[in-house]
Image 1 (cartoon, rainbow, N blue to C red):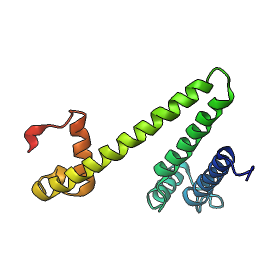
Image 2: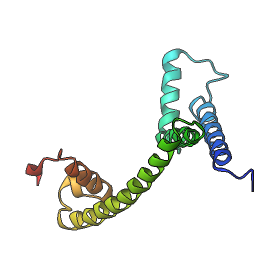
Image 3: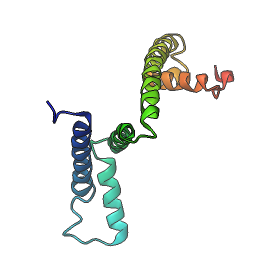
Image 4: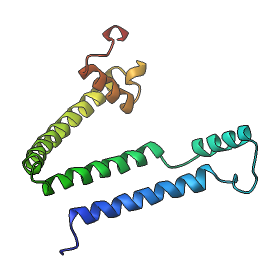
Length: 148
């Protein structure tokens, strides 16, 4: 079990997601452009159509890669003498933030269901995802209450 550590798991996950991202870019977006050598406008259209027809959510994959990089950077703090205490403090704060996030998301989810049932005819509450986003905007006090 000495090789099964967080650093090794994170490094492996970063490697796999990076490779998946590279394969998607090289195979999906540049599909049928290596051998045909089209003009730049046609090539740009081909890239765009291949991008929009892709079944992979590229933003989500990039978010996963960046999150794993931040986990790796955070995990390296414990090896530096100056930031060792900061690593412990951030670990405690992250646990509190995770607890708050679970309660916050559950409350927004419950109120989004209620808002969807009551205000289903309004565009902002027409489905669950838009209702949750509307309630998130309302917690930031950027929602226009006059729309209702």
